[in-house]
Image 1 (cartoon, rainbow, N blue to C red):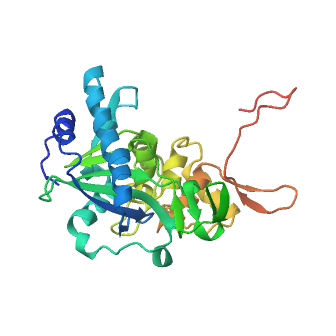
Image 2: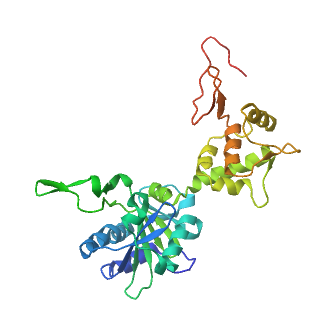
Image 3: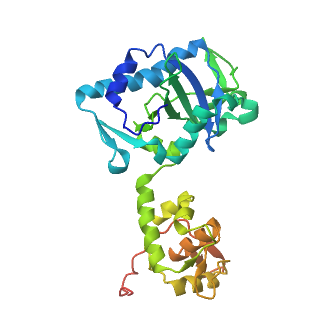
Amino acid sequence: MTDTQTPTDIFLWANQNDGIKNELELELFVFNKNYTPYSMKFSKDLEHQLRAMFIYDVINTINFGAGTGLSVRDYELSEAEDNVLLRTELEKVERAKTLINLLEHERGTIEPFSEGDHEFKRIKGVALRCTKSDGSDAFYIVKAVQQSNVLAGAVSWELTGGTLAPFKADVGVKMPNDNQVMVVGNDIFIFNQGKFEKLFQYEFKKQLLADEKVAEIEKAYKLSFPEGLDLQSLVRERRKIVNKLQKLEVGAVTQEQAIEYADTMELELMSDEKDQIIIMDGRDLDMFVNLINEDYITSELTGKRYEIKSKKLLGEPEGEPPRG
């Protein structure tokens, strides 16, 4: 892997690697939801499939695109379109950066995968590391593993020559045949935006809007945090809150109403002598955002308290004037 910050000329890269694609050295890894990688052995029979499904398809797609006007655009500034290849920097995508750093610099300490110790049902993705025969110019092709395409050997059958028999392997997996993500140097090339975002939990556009909402919240409410913690850093670690902030109407519930609301609902959300709402951790943040989004309710029938997971605003009853 190179450390250069100059964007990769992906068309030159594809042209250069097309001629050596059969000589590239391959190392296969899987990684779990915590982005812990494990090395995987593969048979000689599988090697041709690996080259075809991972390397050949990527190179052919880029080379074909070079003749049809394929353009490379920044992921953060563009949307996925036909004949557009999105690109971002590895440094920006923390989980991808963590994974690639482990594969590049800790490869000697990575455990081999075994079903008994690690369980394939916990695997999130597969990464193929490709290098020249001298070990230089590493690049990675990464694909998501769909657990719906994983067969547990103990409860699966196989059909051979018209005869059903017990599935002999520990696990069977159908690998996706589409191009998804490739890492070359400091660049991530995104062939499938949705799968890239899910693989590495990187949703820049959602986070950008969430950042704007955070700024609005900081203006509208008085909040208190422990030393070293702030609203922005807490929000970035809570995907559920990032999603909720997309539709939040900041200011509809005032500071005073939020404090009174918390008291009415008997929530353990405190305020200090300056009437600042105290946010100690992610749990407090969840409660605060739920409060200003009016996500708590007491049933008039049973008196039980509920947290509302989704809301649909009802229209005014017929014959009644609008409330306002």
